[in-house]
Length: 144
Image 1 (cartoon, one colour):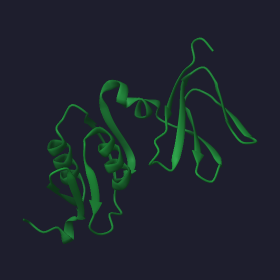
Image 2 (cartoon, rainbow, N blue to C red; image 1 turned 120 degrees about the horizontal axis):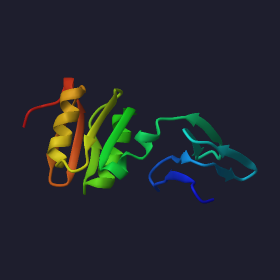
Image 3 (spheres, rainbow, N blue to C red; image 1 turned 30 degrees about the vertical axis):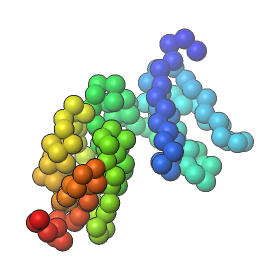
């Protein structure tokens, strides 16, 4: 429909496909389930085929258009998945990383700068070896 603006977030490695509506209405269908998504809402299709509908911050869902990473109470696993789609890295975890992060970072920053910001704001450390990034809880991080 003319005037409908929406964003779809779907990656092969992600467990959820998300559709966010900014203007207009989008009908979201999965199997027999169907929902109408209104502006400010996001439909999520989980791997089990269930659809959920939530109110969301549309700026966060479309931050990539402004060349920003926008993380809202995101797990470090989710953040590192996003970074691995932007930078040519492979992520490895050394220990459980339970913390969540909220923040906005420019996508134009280097990987090192982004990781330094995440270290400063959270209780994690990163070790970089080539294109491999190891994520560790700060308590168990060892200096090289």
